[in-house]
Image 1 (tube, chains in turn green, yellow):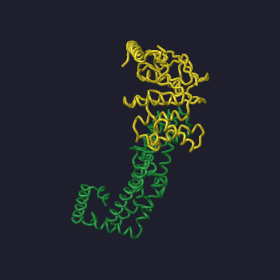
Image 2 (cartoon, rainbow over the protein chains, first blue to last red):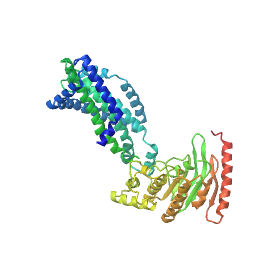
Image 3 (cartoon, rainbow over the protein chains, first blue to last red):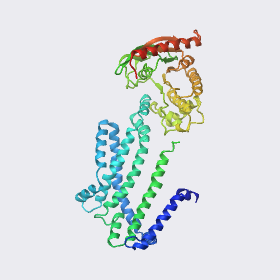
Length: 251
Length: 249
């Protein structure tokens, strides 16, 4: 219990309550179509939980993210390796990532619809292209930050290339990878949901847009809430745990 | 293992080391002294085969040391910084450098434990470097260098980052370890007192581009206090000459 009160510390809780109260007042003033009441949203959440719809759509979104974001992480690791072995490649990768980084989500959504049609691959490809530069820049940065003095120590003691890689390069790059994945995953969720508006018939983005079309505004809010929950849970349960594990040796 | 340094020189943009020659018999404790920036560390790196020389040669028991080439002589190095891997425990840090020697994992851990005990770190084997003091990290680095049972042990101002008290303790420790293990040691320091306290042979380098200014056997025939005075005079002269010779920052 103490833990819970510590996490949501009092001022935050007070502000949250003020927001919900304002929300409720505004919903009374403007009506359920524009702004459904907090209670209606809570009911809606109960409904999707009961019908199991929440798992179907969240699962579909997460599956696409797993492919798109997973692929991005894999390619990012390869780019990181490349940047490590060749300073020439590091420059090229760096510039490429800068270009990718400044490309808008919408560009990839439109292009992926042209290339892949209205299929699963459109949101997957969009997610891939958007998260790749984020994860890869982190890894490349991590690879550049490997302490050369430690590598020289490895040389002095005649450690093999493979041993230097596993004992020195990987552990010093891992925190950067995890940090990149944390940011990348959040981005993946936001981006894939947008891409799901087009062409697919499952996923949080699809069901949100569908709810809007059938004028079920409270369901739009429900799915927004689901998204926030998924994001917070993966952040706290997955990434924070992993980075704590990796950083055991610190302090 | 007999170390011979003959006519070794190094140029970067300017000549840093002109030509340095000295020899160390097996079991000798050589201290390299000289003004800052005279190339002590560079010389040590050349001896360790980390960096190539511009001229001259280094031999261990008659066989040449060539930079970046593997050789079967074992050289342990203690750097100015501890250069321990922060994500490995002290034991694993020491055990890591034993992997090229082809020992089994259990044996590596046992050897690591033995040398950590020798350097006074019994009980701290499972600690991460970040959780022990700077002095203890440097001890672990020494344990790592000793664990490969080196033919030659190179130490580059290993106690530079330590406070005076720890420094004195570590000097005595190194002296003791040297007596117990009989390794040939080349020890770079800028502290004359330190060199006189622990070295058997003192090599005083001149200002840049450096040569050997004086080679002194510290066998107790010259009184220590006088030796320290003489060396202090020498180093002041060299510092002055270096500042006069090159327009430094």
